[in-house]
Length: 77
Image 1: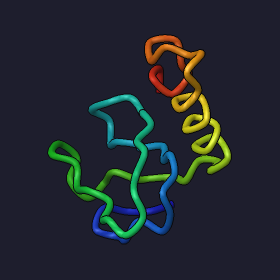
Image 2: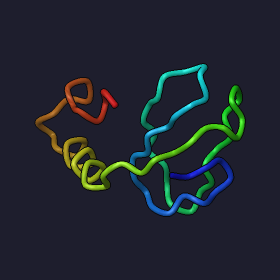
Image 3: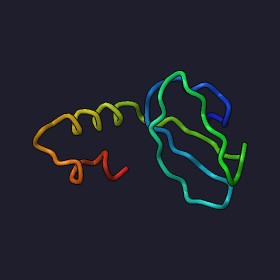
Image 4: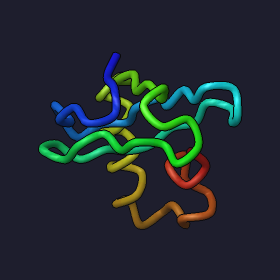
């Protein structure tokens, strides 16, 4: 689990958990960046690395010309 201000270790999807004000959601974070502080819950937000193979699957679907963006799984995340 990662906290705001820590360096993002790999490009992948992360589950974000907020402190009471918002449901959890997914963010694709890019390696070398820094996990952001939430405007509402500040440093209480937490980031959990999701399976990176899911990220690669999203990229494959997005690059497949047979899938329109509104139909791809990645567009729904």
